[in-house]
Length: 119
Image (cartoon, rainbow, N blue to C red; front, side):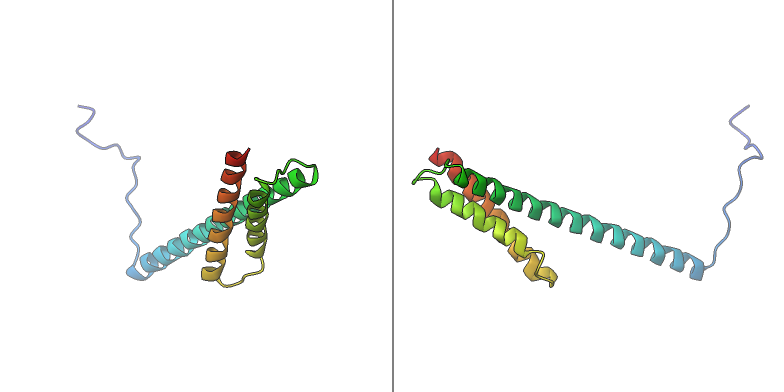
């Protein structure tokens, strides 16, 4: 029957030594670590860009006169969040940079929420 015997086209796996296998595993781990590092860096940059964008929009709305006395504080908080987002590019250590980015996100979210609630 067709399923009982294997066809001759299937090749056996090449036998590799433990050293080759360990080297391949190490190469794989280094590749994955590099991709993760790049992905996290891209995510951090995108979040920082978003906080800077919020600050630029808040500044523009203040310049054209959209800020009322009740919403002025929230515009200022949004701009401060953008300043922290910009500061992430000047902090070189990974842990403090993460804290600065977290502060930037919190300030931007609080500022935008306050702007919408005040208007």
